[in-house]
Image: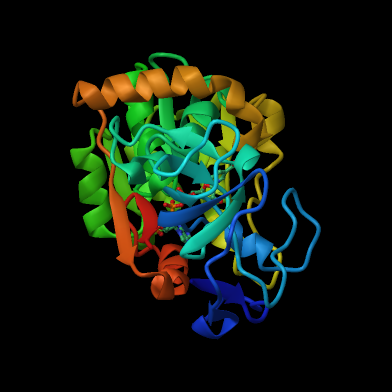
Length: 329
Ligand code: NDP
């Protein structure tokens, strides 16, 4: 069994040296436990925060211990809580080939309904984040103009498509390359721009000349400032993530125009997907229906091998992924 440990805490941008590949025994299950041979694991931006030794909504990763996070695999030993050998389960112990999982913390899924990787992407946590953030937190209404940053990523690409499917009037996305912008146009975004091409403020004004009603923020910083500037009266922003600052060592300079929230009566609302589990059934029904009808596309960038999981994580932070970044274990 090979697993990835946190060898040291990154200062600023993480590097390969912050991680260590460690060989251990394949675990044996005790009462109430199962052993899962992981097939796919997720790398996610929030993991960067857990590499710092600070108090947050999830505890920090421990040094010299395996990292963890969303994973899916097949049960190879143990039996408990209605889960048996051969079942496919979702659980929280990624970053390793074999996981010793408390059966209560695993959720059985049907591998015949969708490719198993989809339970970590379109049908998983990032899909639900998009769905809940757009429809519940920002309460998007038909006809509205939606702007989403990080639009070619796992969450962002779902936000834009769900917005269109739920009747948004105009959907605008920003992303980090020409190829990503082209992909957004193919996914049905009405306009998209590469934020490297000039000030976000100018690109957004050109892409959404009548202003923005809903902003889905994955990036923070200059993007958030531009969105506040472009938002219409009574606009709502779902504050999902601020990846532009996850590796900074200094506090961000933007947004400098926060006072606009007063006159425009804006709502800026942070949220965590974990609080929106009540939407899961509706989310799965909607997403599965759209997938079946060919109305929703999803991209996955798959890196092979547990030994390459740190590189997959670093690639995610650098924007090397289209859609969900996954490791095939
Ligand atoms: P993505 O698939 O979007 O991958 C991260 C992307 O961020 C990269 O592909 C890169 O794309 C972009 N990026 C990196 N650095 C910058 C930068 N400086 N400025 C602008 N874009 C940058 O990841 P996820 O879909 O998993 O997550 C998206 C956001 O949602 C993150 O902020 C994450 O923390 C947040 N999140 C929040 C949750 C919640 O419950 N609140 C749950 C899940 C995710 P590019 O090439 O376009 O730069």
